[in-house]
Amino acid sequence: MGEECKGAGADVNAGVDPAAIEKLYEDVPPMPLMALNHISRLCKSVDASVRFYVKALGFVLIHRPPALDFSGAWLFNYGIGIHLVQRDDARRAADVNPGELDPMDNHISFQCEDMGAMEKRLKEMGIRYMKRTINEEEGSPIDQLFFKDPDGFMIEICNCENLELVPAGALGRLRLPRDRHNPPLRMDGADE
Figure 1 (cartoon, helix red, strand yellow):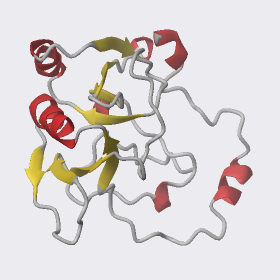
Figure 2 (cartoon, rainbow, N blue to C red):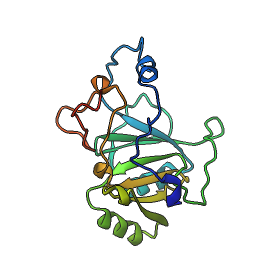
Figure 3 (cartoon, rainbow, N blue to C red):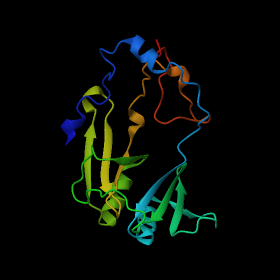
């Protein structure tokens, strides 16, 4: 599976006409967006999913507005919310592959400051996972752990702060949190 990500960190815009990149942003006004707020997941069992996200990933159950009169739960931590909604006949998610751990599958990724502690936690909980390291040859190794939640939704844990973001001609359009940005962002003329 590691071969599928060969070249991670390489210039994905090699051979792309800079004028074509500039044209991509024509007529796109600055957006008033600030950050990703939450993801929403349809669940076979909200209770099982709450236990998983709390115990495996350290999320905190938070109050949901009373106006939401359907079965669900809200979780929050690390600057992002996870909204869980009970799956029923009227609300059916596309089936996910509960079996294979495929890093190319749809997934959400969490930045991690201690990969060893996270791997230990997955082992303690008996959660099947895939471990790999990419980008070693470029000198910025990225460790990754892939596993699935109770509904088969892929989750990645990584130390992606080792990978520098290099904007493709749109540095002035990036909006970053005011206090910090992880992974680091190169600001030394990458926009040229």
